[in-house]
Image (cartoon, rainbow, N blue to C red; front, side, top):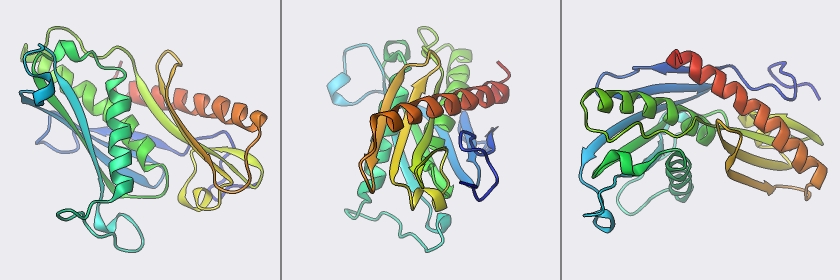
Length: 238
């Protein structure tokens, strides 16, 4: 089926990672997946949560939020105890995914904070956040290494994510909102540079999906993430 922007079914949207987007965080990246824009920042503080104190290792955590004007209809800010459950689920996913490629022992007793704020949402905000967070983290660790506060290089691999789905009976890569909103199956994939999966989140929104559709989504998604890796490396010059 023809896509709104003329892409092939297995083709991601235009991808970009703009580094040093703000001057207040050592790692600061504007991640763009098509019209989706997510500001990803990486900072660190001394000390770790109580459950890690005295163990000689660090911690990494993530927070995620959508700005009020990131969607067509204004989204209310989280205030007090009124917290968006979807946002909590996504920030846990981001933290889990990034910790999968970080050796926390190299941080000593320091906490790394990944903050992902959606400026504009057009589908795939969590995958853009994870992919942008890795670039921001790379810059943060370069900064920390220059300050000689690391025991060694903490990153064990590259990290990328992308959405896939079945729309109109066809497997598509990197769904925008118009596609995601009518998908029969919606899936988010997180993968390391070695091609290992950290997270596979998939659910049938309409009819159950078949095993051959699952295999096709994994294949198309892995190819899309390899494209994410290429753009990340180009942005970092590595």
